[in-house]
Amino acid sequence: MKLLLRALVAGLMAGASPLQAQTPPTAQEVTAYTGLHAAAASGSTGEVDDALKEGADINARDPFGRTPLMVAVYRRDLAVAQALIAAGANVNALEHQSYDTLTIAAVQNDAEMLNLLIKSGGNTRAITSPYAGTALIAAAHLGNVDAVAALIAGRAPLDHVNRLGMTALIEAIVLGDGGARHQSVVSALIAAGADVNLANAQGTRPYALAVDKGFTAIAALLQQAGATP
Image 1 (cartoon, rainbow, N blue to C red):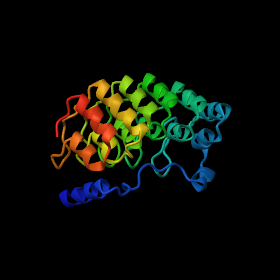
Image 2: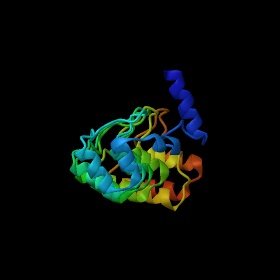
Image 3: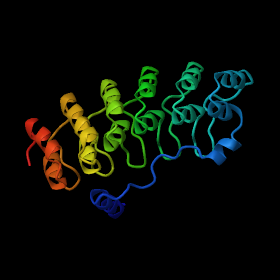
Image 4: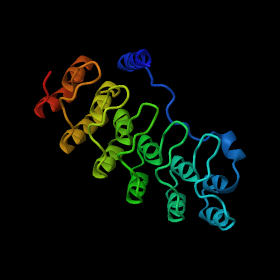
């Protein structure tokens, strides 16, 4: 297990793509859907209501473990998501790869959906993904500024360390492109109180990581916040 984690970290540090992340329903899966999954995929709140009146399981699972609410979140369908939540959908369910609705919305930078989910009991502290991360780490990695802001406002843990030994701040540096979006994410994390000197699994601190990547703007932000090499 330790060797696998070292290989994953080495690949990520070298700029390789992480292993398969979230898996939205394919067109073939959607075509095969029945009941509440089909209603959620249709985008019709009327069909959702009809399925529920017929006794459909609000938290039914498709073969991949996705709930109807997850289908709505993948579709960015706020109206259907609201209808499902109002009917009692589990906002914090995990599918087979341990992703929840918050992490799905975070990866899509869907702040409006995130705000709905958080307001409806979504757990911003939930440990998700095969990497034992959080929705905030996923959003920071991708430079999803709006999602990061929504999750910080929802009290997501700033310094959670995932299975790869990375925090949201470290992923924004190591897996980011150093551009405006990732600079904004770093700024938001710093302003929220993220630990700018918390090192990765190899003992390297964020400032040194930014310098190594050639991200001078991010390095400057970190230095101004008290980061040390």
